[in-house]
Image (cartoon, rainbow, N blue to C red; front, side, top):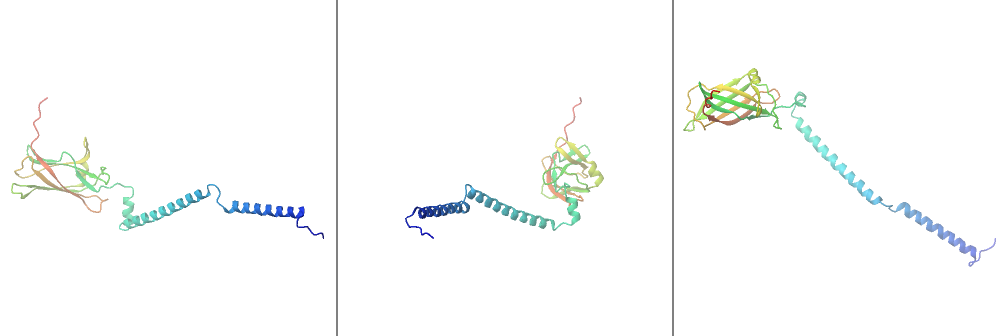
Length: 218
């Protein structure tokens, strides 16, 4: 076998081929292992999205725990009754409520709204308990009366007017009381409703007003 001289063209060619192969292999490795265009930013965006998903999953777990804790106090029947059915949770005195001097004596004119948590009017069933207390010149309480309105009367008192839907109760006040326009009368109301765990109760004051002006003949 012939020996290749150190300075021969064949040896030089073999060296060039080996060097070229090594360079190509190095370039291939750098392309395979190094970051390509945009790969770093894409990896960063993916990691941000993964972190956001983890945060939302944790928040959802906390909210589910709060919901389960809130529902723990209710029976399945309570939850079925409350689901999707609006229920009143407050009693609001409406405009037109007053203790007024009538021809036959004093009269309680009460206008009430039963509302849900969003301020929307919601009907209630009754019965209803109403009490009225005034205070004399010495600030001593005077009971003007206590009334129990049955469910049928309560339903029939529902009215729709310029100020919205409300229950209108007009009750005569028995007795001779020294009431004067401008005085305040304390009213307490309790309304029963099967959707409420306890009676809807409210206390508020309404004014004492004088008699209505006489009507002018047409």
